Image (cartoon, rainbow, N blue to C red; front, side, top):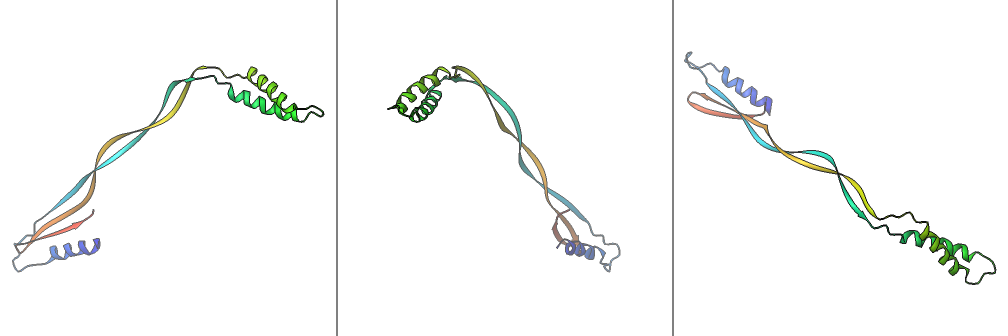
Length: 139
C-alpha cells in the first residue's frame, strides 16, 4: 500500500500539462500523539516490627517428641503422656524465642508517569489543476 501511494504521488507530480508554467505545490504534515509511559523504580523499604517472643511452637515440638519417646519405653504404662509433659517443659526452657523489635525489609516498586510524543502518521496535500488531493502515509 505504501509503495502504491508513493508511486501514485510520483505519477501525478511527473504528469506534464499543456501549460509548461503550471507548478504543483504541496505540503507534508506529520502528526504525533501523546503516549503515557509508566517508568518503574524499585527500592528497599525497611520498618521495625514488634515480635512477641512466643514459645508455643517450641513447647509443642518438645511435647510431640517427648510423647513419641515415652510411648517407645517398654513396660512403662502412660509413658507417652509423661514423655509429652517432660518434652514440653524441656522445649519451653530451651526455646530461643525472644520478644522485642525486628527490622523487616521489602522490595517496593513505584511508578513515575511520563508523557512522550509518538509519531502516528503523515499527510501529503497537493493541488493539481485546481483540485486538492490528500494522501495519508507513514514515514
